[in-house]
Length: 319
Image 1 (cartoon, rainbow, N blue to C red):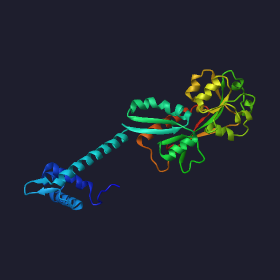
Image 2 (cartoon, helix red, strand yellow):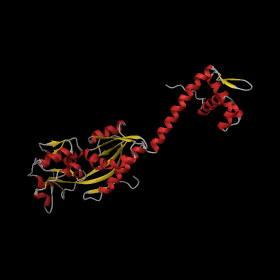
Image 3 (spheres, rainbow, N blue to C red):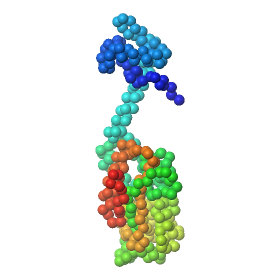
Image 4 (cartoon, rainbow, N blue to C red):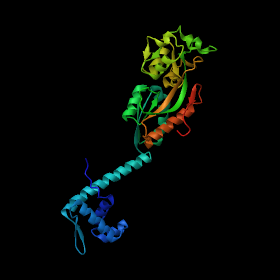
């Protein structure tokens, strides 16, 4: 455990450094905007707290003792460290530097976070960003452990006392080849998919869990023999004709879907299933300036996407 006498102050150490620098009390007092008597008292108190004389005083000069000379090197090194620390904080506050780590669902990373990075990189090139893809459980665990600044994803039942704030809700819909007749049907119900091969996401994903709890899901959706771990693989499987799938509207905006010109998305009419995406944080933990910057950019992306069908903004006005 560090040892630092309770009765030694930073002001006393600053006074010690300035007297050593000036070699006399009078100019040091002027530099520090103190009376000479106040400066002398500060040095006396420091020597008394340390139990050593730091200066040899004559009528005209003030010189360092051997102990004072050794102590001065340590004090100045400590000041340099403090100054660097204040500079680092200033850099963070001014967003010249900083590191942000965010855990999120794959579609959140691809649709909400990656698109905002080019502009941020130009404006704030000193900020480092780590984007970590994870399941709802993994996101909650990373936030709880403090290994990420915040998470963005679905609620996880065993998330404990984590703070969760709604960001956006998006409706579930059908992803299929453009030639699928159900895409142009007057009304689309999940029961209409019962005769089709289905491609799902693995059971640890929030989307799979949401479908499992929704009413009226046909057996082929709940017990599909083909599951993928992320939307990119799922879209590739659908494009290869391996089946249709159900994903939320935000996930349907994944760049991989855009690259597959033969795929289309159509919102379900029955049942209406909404996925809620949340900001997940540890309680009573403020975001760093860099993390706040990235979240603000994410919120702006959400506001833009909320103009699209099936996407509803849930954010409080103050977020």
